Image 1 (cartoon, helix red, strand yellow):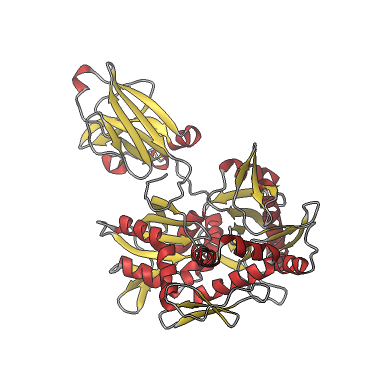
Image 2 (cartoon, rainbow, N blue to C red):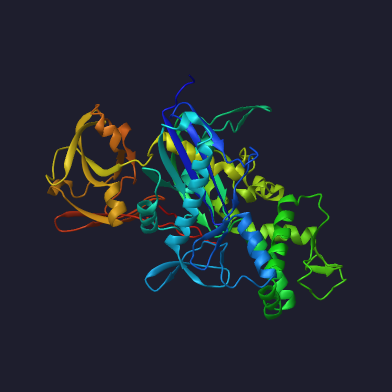
Length: 533
């Protein structure tokens, strides 16, 4: 009998553009990942996040099959009783979270996401049944959703998902980082590679459809990392496609163009697919991009070739090399400014790691490489499966969420309402006052603590520290080296601390009022940069 592994991890990625599943067997130290296969045992990648719903809102088809069937129904004018969803952006309608289908009809977001998850989960479970050795293994499910999905929606989904006992949601940023640190990515000399070492800082750029995450991490052990900064940028793989269609609209008028597309949805999809295929192949040797114009869409012919505008000729769309490069530059402008801001003055950043579908474009990689040089810009192995495979890895690692405790260090025990820990500070006995736990911040977003000092202590500088609760739980002797400074030594004043916290320190009659605030929801970045939590 072969070796029985301890756990079976199922992973589902629900992306705004592509979705998929994978599963793995093993434990934290020894595991194997299986990617999705079709009925002929051929490996398949992620599939379009596209749903075709029947009139009663039950699922008719998903992925490529949903797209093809809806196009076929549209051509025969038999699509009116169906709902086709290929964009799972969430909007607020009255007191409900909704998603709009391609004709603007509102559908409940919980129903749409649950339908996608259940479909992919059943596909995943079906494939695990091919392996007899998985039959009695404990199963857990890891799900990644777009970053704009709220905690409330995740909680609702968690209650409704069946067939597995343990369900955990992780962010795409977590999964991407877990995948990246498992790879031998760093060049060591001209040909050799190695894994990132303890203390190495690195940037992960994960391209989504319309949202790209840029995260700065630091390795804190040989197989673990810490998130230092995270940016959400309102750009992604679809940004360049949107710029292309904006140019068409400018050239021919929004009314004329959208009237055509309204009557010929399949023509619009064909044109969009044609551009998407070409953008991934485009490189410096491409003289111009040629896209077949669908027969259902007829544009006024323009024989005058131009480097500055789109040309229609002989049922083809012609885009010059210069114009195509301009599209790429425009689509990446906010990303480039963010990366430049992060790397500025930071010598310890070793590399920028790229994953997500848009990262496969040679021009995208070339533009980013130029910006970060002499630091390395690296395309990870199978970049479009990075989040999915990383989610499986996180399933074996357990919950990485760390409880952190914030407080100050005093030379003598005081303020009874705060529990204290005896520590050694600069060779002397001192006390760490445990004031705020990170779990409290997540529940309340902000919390205020009042510190009462003796008269002779009121003018002493204040330093805010934090420590991993796991270090305290070991009950080993602690010194100041076990604590991380959140602020420099400061007199009471307003102070921006770092990328995660904001503190307000103000003097009162009795002492000091300390207010710590953590931002929970990520900002969507355009051209400006803000630190977020």
